[in-house]
Amino acid sequence: MGSPRGEDQRDEPLVLAHGLTKRFGEFTAVDGIDVEVRRGEAFGFLGPNGAGKSSTMRMIGCTSPATSGTLRVLGADPRTQGRWIRARLGVVPQSDQLDADLTVEENLIIYGRYFDLSRAECKRRAAELIEFVQLTERARSMVEPLSGGMQRRLTIARSLINEPELLLLDEPTTGLDPQARHVVWDRLYRLKQQGVTLVLTTHYMDEAEQLCDRLVVMDKGRIVAEGSPRQLIEQHSTREVLELRFAAGTNEERAPSVEGIGDRIEVLRDRVLIYAADGEKALGMVHDRAVYPESALVRRSSLEDVFLRLTGRTLVD
Amino acid sequence: MGLPRAPLRVWESNLAYYKHVWRSNLIGSFVQPMLYMLGMGVGVGALVDRGPGASTVLDGVDYFAFLAPALIATTAMTIVTQEALWPVMDGFMWSRRFEAMTATPVTPSEVALGTALWLGTRAFVCATGVAVVLLFFDDTRTWGLAVAVAAAVLTGMAFAMPIMAFSSSRESPDQSFAALQRFAIIPMFLFAGAFYPVEQLPGWLQPVAYVTPLWHGIELCRDAVLGRLELGPAALNVAALTAFTVVGYAFARRTFATRLGR
Ligand SMILES: Nc1ncnc2c1ncn2[C@@H]1O[C@H](COP(=O)(O)OP(=O)(O)O)[C@@H](O)[C@H]1O
Ligand SMILES: [Mg+2]
Image 1: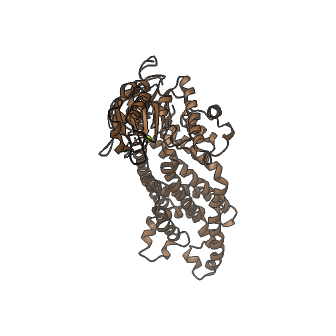
Image 2: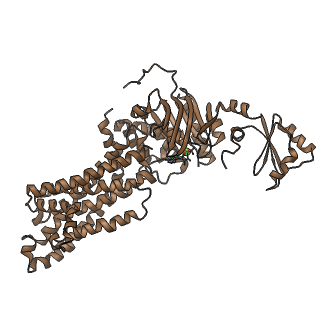
Image 3: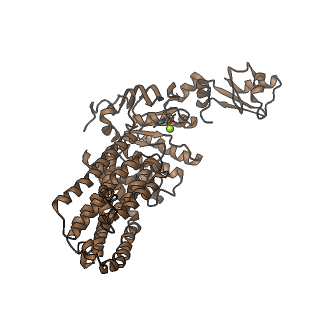
């Protein structure tokens, strides 16, 4: 079966959503979002827990029907061509959903069989993918005792068994230690270089900055901003941020003492943020007022700051 | 792609798991029926066969020959009951492998069908096991055993399908799984005619036995092995078991579809 609308439409977005909405009973988890993912890019949904990221991914993955709005994936309609679409997707769900009582290799083989690949072909691809995710020594071991990072890599390998055009990754590195995260990022980079289109969700701003060409910031089922990480930072934040920490519990009461410095001030429980083009200069002004916090740090603005600006809340708390 | 093959792929993934555990599993499936066969069939049998009413109550059949064929059906029941509870709950709740399956071309209904096929296979394997043991006894060495295995598979399905509908609708096993064992499976095992004719029960209890799927299964297995199957009653037994299977499956399929397609 060819593409329902012809294979030559290379410029057509791989995901195109318009007013996409998901309700569970009365509760609206995804509230009319517009999304466009282009071939070859890495596209991110950045948002805190409960933002509606997984619900969105499951609609794109054609395992959860949209309540309203339009959605096209790989040019096809999930309502009528779900099976055709799923055959061409790779899915890394938020929870790995591995078979703990099977070996690494068996997990890949049985998954490949769901795509109607021959046993021999499954075996061949499994061997290749096991090497790609660096699990060669563990190929014959059960999944159960593997570390979280290894299981995650196996899930990524599994999602590639059908050589998908579009890979959906729901929080690919949540819960992993820093080293394990870097291994996963490195693999995802490789896939991107090979031309696989990536759609991922995350609540880590560093992950979004590292991996995404373009992203949307999601909060309470809505998209609150869209662009490349750099564009978002330019539009919604200053170049630098001065972080001041006062004695525990006194950040709020000390904040007025630095009022008026920089473009904008955010007061958090554990620190005061001063948004300024030049952080060192802002720190000089703080000292000129004879205000001496316990620590002061100048850093570049990040997506965390963008999120704070747009929603008044931090991404991870 | 060949759509009818999808349920078979689901079946295959169960087989992959079974390959790891079949040895210990198979032994487990045998110990229980063997214990009943020897303990009751031989021990109690000696008592019954010498008793005053022996020839009339059991229609002139040895107690061992009366009991042993029933164990084909009861074994199928006990094994698939377990299989339709925990692994199904696991697929939705713990490993969540059913969700992983539906991210592929496989649909929720095909996951249900593949799981059902697997449960039928498990019933076949354990029923065959018991039948093979019965080949070693003069009283029960007959071609009827093949028919009994088929009847036991149907009996297994008559349990597996309603139970699969039940377990797939639960959010957690809580007390209900244990209660099902205690208040449905074990009573049926004791009162549905495996160890004595249902006619021995008090009059008010007999109709209860007749509506259980196990009684129908035992009747079929016993009559097949003793060479006394009759079309009318057998057709009724098959129809009853088929009804449990079909209705159970219809519910199970619907739960799979809603739960995996939210
Ligand atoms: N099957 C469901 N039934 C009811 N509510 C749900 C269901 N799935 C998700 N939700 C709710 O929808 C909201 C968004 O969830 P989710 O899409 O998982 O967010 P995220 O992945 O961004 O953390 C949450 O409040 C969650 O509780
Ligand atoms: Mg999520």
